[in-house]
Image 1 (spheres, rainbow, N blue to C red):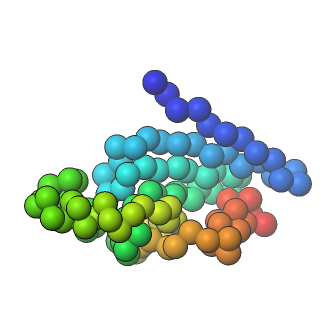
Image 2 (image 1 turned 45 degrees about the vertical axis):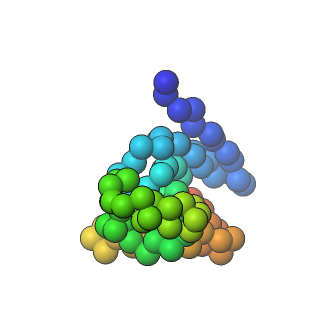
Length: 104
């Protein structure tokens, strides 16, 4: 079943939020925010993650899985390649992302 996108308008700017699913390599979910000036990706990852490259895809010991579950999940912004990293999502980083996709 295809996920529905959400479109919002701010002062003449249109921004589309598109959920891409929960089975994304390196995360537990992904949402793209698209505007006329570009796209920003949000990933649902372990709170302690600083990179998507450390993801094991559920493989490993039960202790490691329990540790990851205990750490919890949070949404983070993924920077574009070639230097991909994760940025904590807060009001400031969301506003910066919104300005990026709207060319504001």
